Image (tube, rainbow, N blue to C red; front, top):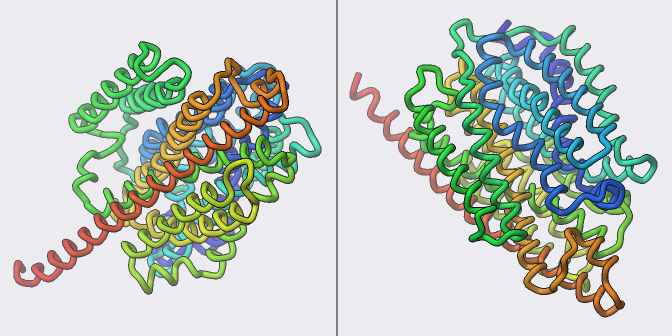
Length: 499
């Protein structure tokens, strides 16, 4: 069912799908506060930790487009229910994992369910709300997206404080069950009767390509950027992703219609979405380590100190500040302002709150600035992406939006983590694979202090790299969106003459 005047239970349905989406998004960042426990109990190295995080986001990013195509063709309600079931089963396997390999595999399985969930939530929103309420609904959807991304460390900290690390996954199971029941009872079925067939080869190529590329980035500091262990997967990633692009141009039912990239509004929103998530994903991965490893906070304390980011996003979006700014300034300036604030937040954390001599107040300022930037820019970019794609392709559009977020997040963790590792290795000569192991192997207090200083310096460098990337991305996205608006106005002015 698609409601031209809005589904009568649309707000209740929005609440249900946002609950499902929140659970999926929390698992992007909830694992970060468990890093100390995982390094101790599972003897996980820094590379293992990065793969525990990236296995989830990379599988999602590889499958979201295919899931969107399948949802458009076979029914969004069916795929939403299937996603909840798979996500719950993957969470069970992750919570009971006994080795790093098992946990990484379980996280990949959760990514499959997460892909089905993420691609259908926004598509359902597009179907059940009419034009008069759709912008507000997308803003609330984006609020939940930001909340899920930012609140993970706090929720993870509360769980780790009272339970063992496996509970951060097992807690997903009752939520998945409640969501599944609600979806089956409340959410209307909707699909495109002439929807495209799933592009299975495209999904395979994109997953292999992105996984190989990020693997090269993760292992670069460990093996050396010119080593075969890095160059081979990097080459595989480039070749496979190029083959993916060629295949998508030729296949009758592409997973990603490459002609979308001719739309400047789409390209601008794509650039902004990837780079803002690049900065945020890498930043949260680094911040939780800084709070625990450098400043010495317990998991719950670290999570509480990350909370201002989520609270800022929620307060600004629930009060309607974000949508009002878009209405007043327009999309391009809003994106530029939002991403500049995110970059300023990252810079504040690096300059004022970074290092072993840094204070939490510098970090607090950075978190608030980042929260304001997210609340302002994310709804504008999501709306720009979805408005650039035909309504009957709502599932594909949601898949593209989710792919960008997941890929940006995974790439941010990989790249900024690699910058941290490279800087750390350049400052101190250690053979340990993680900071706790390096500190444990240190022979004196002076050596331990040098290791902590080197790690903190690596964190600062990484945050500054993220800040530059987000700022540049904001300027690029705003310029492309502004050019697209001028083009649309020109075509609209010429339309009566042509008629």
